Image (tube, rainbow, N blue to C red; front, side, top):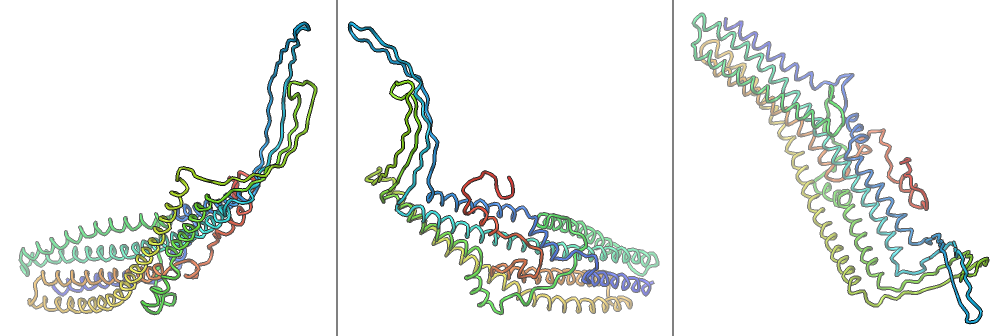
Length: 464
C-alpha cells in the first residue's frame, strides 16, 4: 500500500512540475507584453487625459501671441433726438432727427515692457513642460502595465501550483485513510492529512482572490481582460551598465526633472512679465466711422477717420504691481526648490529599483537551489517513511517546504522582470521606442504646429 501511495504522489508532483514548466513556454496564440503595452499606450485614460492637457497648453502660445496683433472692434450707435427752440416774436421750431453711426476701430500695442514676448516664451515653456509630464505619465502607465502583466503571470502560476498541491494532498489523505484501515498508521496521521488538505484549499481561495486583483489591475492599465499571457524576460541591453551611470542618466533625462526645469523657465519669465507692468505702454489706435443726422441736423452725413498715438506711464496702483512682482519671485524660488526635490526623488527611485534588480537575481539563484534541495529532501523523506523512519507529518512538511520554495521562485522571477523595467523607468527611458515596439503614432508637435499661428476659428483641429 505504501509503495502504491508513493508512486501516485510522485506522479502528482511531476504533473505539477510539468505544468509549471509549460507555463514558461511561449504559445503561438499567447498575448505578448508588447501588445499589452501598445494597447495601454493608445487607450489608457491617464495617458489620453495628459495628451489633452498638452493640447490645452499648446493653446497658450497663440493666446499669448495675441498681444503682438491688433485688436479690432466694430462700433455702432443709434438714437432719437428732438430739439424745440423758441425765439421771442418769431415763434418756436421743432427739429427731430435719428443720429446714427457705425465704424471700425483698431488698436495696436507697440510697447508694453516686454510683457507679450515674455508671455509667449513662458507659454512655450509650459508646452515643453506639459510634453515632459506626458512622457512621465506614459512611463508610469507602461510600468504599471508591466507590473500587472507579471502579476497575472505570477498569480496564475501560483494558483496552478496550489491547485496541484490540493490534488496531491487529497490523494495523500485518501491513501492515509486506506493505510489507517489496515492499521499501518494512526488516526493522528489521518487528522494531519485532513488539516493539510483544508489549509491547502484555503490557500487556493486566497490565490484566486490575488489573481482576480491582478486581473483587475491589468484591465485598468491595458484596457482589456488578459487572455493567455506569454512569458517575459528581464531587460538587459537597454539598461545602464552601473548604478552610477543610471543615476547620471536619470538626472539628465528623467521627464519629471526636465518638466520641473521648464517650470523654472516659465516662473522666471513670469517675473519679467510682472515687472513689465511698471514700464510705459505705447499704443496706436485708428478708426473709421460713418455718421448720419449728427448734431440734430437731419439729412446730413459725415465720414470720420482718425489715427491716435497714446502712451500710458504707470505711476502707482496702490502697490499691487510691486506685490505681484515679489510674488512671482517667490514662486520662482519655490519652483527651483521643486527641481531639487524632484531630483532627489528620482535618484532615490533609481537606487531602489537598481537594488531590487540586483537582489532579484540573487533571490532567483537561492530559490532555485532551495527548490532543488527541497525536491531531494521530499524524495528522501518519502523513502524513509516507507520503512517507518518518518511520519506522515514529516512527508507533509517536506511537501509544504517544496511548495513554498516553488512559490518563492515564481515570485522572484516576476520581481526580476518588473525590477528591470522599473530601472528603465527610473532613469527616464521607458518608452515604446526604447522597447522596440512599433505602432505608437502620437506626436504632440502635430497639434502644436496646427494652432500656434492660428488667428481665427472656434473648432479644434479634430473638429470639436
